[in-house]
Image (cartoon, rainbow, N blue to C red):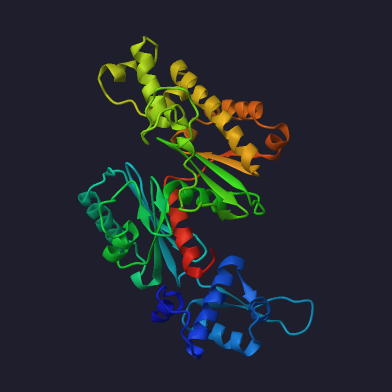
Length: 411
């Protein structure tokens, strides 16, 4: 397995010369080709990579001896000699993914085919911008890696997603752990001993939704609308995540959408997020109770217990009129905002996820109705809508897939 470091070492200089270096680059391309296209024959590799048959044969045999590539036997052909088909060994290389949420940590391990082989969710966590919190995160990552059941040498990279503004190119978070001299990526890399890629949580989730849940594999343009405690979007154009110049694309919740006096978390007034988010629904719910509205959650309010968005969604599913009314209001406002998005991007699909998406049709029916009302008719007809069906570890899965792509040279 020491040879894997040679294939994928980020510090390796492209100016190095020699047959060994050239062969390692070809091996890397073979692995990347199989990761994307699946099983193939030697002649297919020769044709796609523009490498001679003897060289491809030699290097594939070396990869097979290193248990990275598997000889899957003969493939049927219309006539003539039957060639052998080769594929990646799932147990040869792995990637780790971690999502640092506001109130949970999720961890997972994926193989070369993006299959999840191990996952964990830790709910006993609170994200704070403090050195002690960063220590906890790094310690729990190391503990998960050490106990996941996969040999550490086989884990080539760690994708880490975190909420807030992130620049993947510099590895810096601009909302958390900003007092550190090192970038957050470099700090986690140093403490875990793994190659790290840092990503925004919504973008990581968007990539997981795009890659893992689409039914139409020809989709190229997708918007992911995350309606959680806050509001953000992920954008896929021509099959690739869109980042913008500094990696901050997708901060849709902070456009000036309303003429209100509500101060947003960003410090400005009237942001979309001030009325279309889990935090906004919670605040409106409490205000309506104070004004005398009836709800099955009044007893919880009287006990001075916090009322969270999941409580409100559960109440809506139990026919609580106030909960249904507020969720439908958010759906209508979100739909008007989505109309702006689809008129601008003309996507094939809009995926809606996050805590509010758990409300199902209570959210989606008014959202789609408002989108239809405020968007161009031809654009709306071009766009499919679907609710996310992914688990709470989807952010970590997206981060693992993205670091895999980075290391294999697929992005």
